[in-house]
Image (cartoon, rainbow over the protein chains, first blue to last red):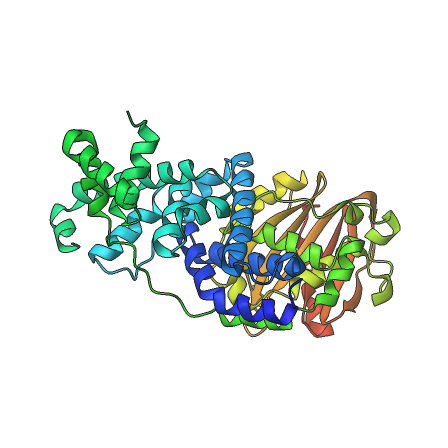
Length: 169
Length: 267
């Protein structure tokens, strides 16, 4: 059983990564903040279920994934929201026109499942298997999502600005 | 013969430097012999070093919330409100984003609050209706930044809220009281709805108007009380119970409540 003070310490240390991941999943900073806050509440609420000695980061990301999945299910039930949300969605203005910013913008436009897999593996540094466990899907599905996502990114980069690709190598 | 998914996995691991020696040899053989595989590897290489992303600083409000979280709050989960309700409501906020979205089950116990408790007739904290306590507990988590970036068009919110409540509902104009409408959310209590309209005062924490359809159908006077740090005004308007929660002094709350009562629903 985990001590609540240890959980708080671990959670605060992990907070920047949870914020970064949420920022990559959500289309607005408000949504990302809400996702992080609710994940934190869930982690605190469930702290007794965490086994000390196991990977706290992976456990917390799994909880965030569960919250996110609930969100996706709700979205499917309320597709009429999408048009309005799209109307209100605006891209960040402060992104510079660099290769890296270009890639991150394209990442945000990937399908959510590809965005989850790519963010967890390449930004958060989880292994393929850990990512599969966090997202509760087979590892083959993770590899497939990565393949589809990276292929799409590559195609979009080439079609947008071939010279930018060279600059990023 | 390597199946497609296996081929993809092998080549991704190869490009990401996670392949074993045997897998490396297998991948290199595949690249030499299979044009599709070679093209795929080229695509992967183009995005290989693109994902470095700096960590943001920890959000102070979230850190504060974590530090203040008390495990004793978990005991109130057994009653169907408290932390569980807070958590559920946060789901609601997340779902809603800048807009309105039907959300999650706040718990059967909440739904089962008695009809007598759904009106504004009982005003001491000990008899604060369960759903009002839920709203107040949840609202404690709201800080200015929670809704500062939201800006839902009033007409859009009015249309959606009216639809969900099946009653012509207005978004009260409270700029004279120093408050700007920010967004609306729909919570779900089993199949029942609880609407929240969030406002941001100029110099105070957010204020929320929450509306819930009840089994009653009558009008009551406005009752004023508090639950913990939250002040509230509560009344019944036909089939709907309305509560305003926030950290407001009595004169402010009275002004706001009177304005909301007179403009929320069409006559």
